[in-house]
Length: 305
Ligand SMILES: NC(=O)c1ccc[n+]([C@@H]2O[C@H](COP(=O)([O-])OP(=O)(O)OC[C@H]3O[C@@H](n4cnc5c(N)ncnc54)[C@H](OP(=O)(O)O)[C@@H]3O)[C@@H](O)[C@H]2O)c1
Image 1 (cartoon, rainbow, N blue to C red):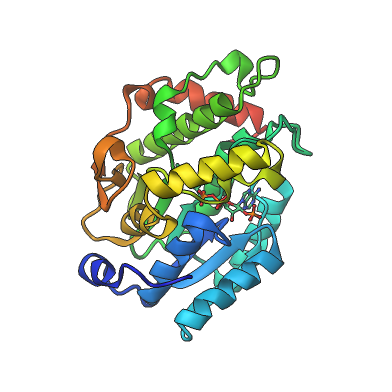
Image 2: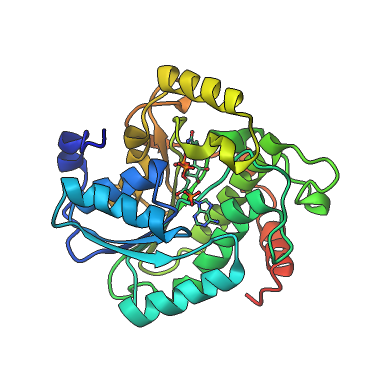
């Protein structure tokens, strides 16, 4: 049952967000859904950027049952497709002109090795390249008169990553865990690179949700069997926190006045797995090869940046 479970925490830690236009990618389920619910509770206008309009409408209706006055709009976005990102930006800008916060939340884990129509591996594209492309392209439309924010969603898995730029998509040695970890290290490197630019009136921040049972292990996505998914989710439900609490790190970095440029927030509990948000540190890996990483990404996307 969906509930506004953390009202007290939200009232204490999150300012009123009336008038703020917040884009959240992939927010029809899991952590993104609760990020949407919790920010809508604080009166933000939320643009739900989702690839499946039916699922998004269902999610919107669930939020409206709890918050009938919530300001929620749905726009189509598939972050694994460059043309979909271009279309989304055109539609968004013609409707809203500017944005205050972009939360790059959409993500996938554990898929079969698949390539997108643009020719890139799907996990790396959804979790990193798409967010890179979207952020770069939409950045000029931030609200320049006030402070705006870009939020990236990383993971503790990034600590075990190892990116080889000669085999960025693990073409001949594909491992689901490895490509996921690498995609989260890639997004962390981009976040630090962008934050280091110290752009006027822009905070570039990151969150990681710890661990939570969501649709990431959905067997219909092809990467895991039904048994693995059932057992995995049961384990996560018992030993980790729920998606609503897991969303609070994103909610916090997207809106708290106490958050600074380049901050990373994640759960405060043991091994950063669960709990309320706390300031966290990236691993040393995230600070390495920043210029190389950006040059490589621009080359890959044929992106003149
Ligand atoms: N759960 C965890 O333990 C955990 C840990 C660390 C980091 N994270 C990160 O948290 C974020 C949210 O994941 P979650 O756990 O909430 O999983 P989830 O329930 O599976 O939610 C993922 C969301 O992303 C959307 N999405 C996937 N591919 C997309 C695409 N190409 N374009 C647009 N939207 C797309 C999904 O939409 P569909 O419903 O259409 O698939 C869904 O709404 C991800 O970035 C994930 O890597 C999660």
